Image (cartoon, rainbow, N blue to C red; front, side):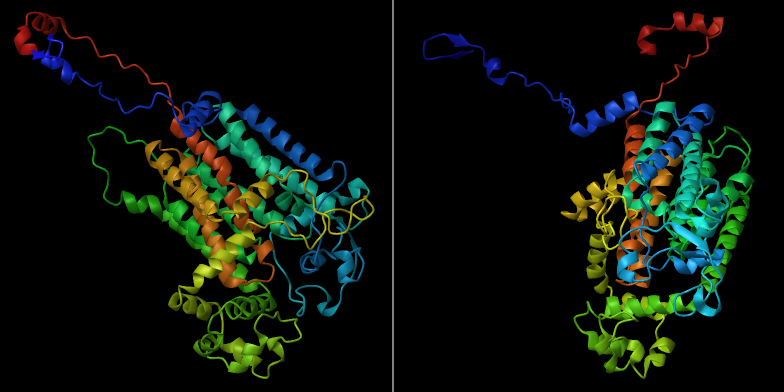
Length: 554
């Protein structure tokens, strides 16, 4: 007892009143937790079950294809104007574009009609050489040529018919995506709708009505992701699942030479075998089981690699030479603090410095240098790779320029509308600028894009290993594929056409948004747990438990 100033006595223990212990849980959950709870409650996957839901998959595919057609044709057709690059690919079908001859005129609008035409000599093929141009986009162009007369667009090929083909293929891929995704119908439809929203942005969808090979790259990428998801699910025939991955990868690699970046990604993905729950068994697995499981995936990887090498070898040499020229004179030298030393390292004459910042068609082009053949013989992709390996600090500035270009996906130097539709020359289609708006916002803080990809990567690993869900693996593949695609373009193509070349990287970055929604929803969902009932004890054990001494049983 302690005596106070007034003479009263107060217990000593009152000064040391116990303080409530904090549980560590905030009474008000944060915004991320509330968002996760909402997604899990409304659109959460619930039990990560597979299969079924055939009718929702078909309906989702039809709805996605119809939405894309409305997007491209209502109120009028929209597409991507041609700079002249499309001629080398489309002319192999025996058609010529109906457009003005002046470059400044035919880039203002889109001219989708291509009429039958007979070419002679080097008039068809790669510009400057006439070499044949190969791409899996030719499959869509050929189908478009078949259905062009059905719409009254002439006897040649109309890019609007090609756009219809691309929309139908996209619908099939969305239906397949819904079929192979795990979880409830609402979850599958949500992810499919988000992927459709990404594809429907004008920076991607407008290429469906164009002579460029980008549609094959976009749709091939989606096909690879769907095929990998089906492969990792481990359901159905393993051979068919593996053949689906091989076929989708070959189609994607054949879209553009830069798509060869998918080769190492798919190789690692195939070796990341489907998760098989361990069975309780007293038998020991054979020691060679690890190798036996990977023989078939390794054979598939070898087949894909052989196809990629053959495809690159068949590409026009002119295209290869232009890429090497741009990598040196449009990228390496203009942004170098010591261009003279760079030329010396490459073993080139200092006189090439005058061509810094040019393309091969410029008046100051290095092609006019008497020693240009020396440049062609000494400099190639292998030597450029060795240069950047010995000068890694140069990659920082290149990466910054690349991210800025990727966040500027709108090609303002070519039009999106047909002439006579009431639009100004070079007007762009911004009727559904979802990705464009996101990238414009991220352009103020480019590091936020890298943070978005890193978050997708980390959550992908968490879902892959904690929930044993193939969606997590898919997120890892998308992020890694985007990074590889980025550096393949930056190191191999240089600055000219960098905005168009990085569209595939931007497409993979935009897919991180639906993947993040899926990952957060899976991590936040709590599947229903089955109540396991313990088996009843025998009567003798029940009696023993009843007569047991409470002190001992405690």
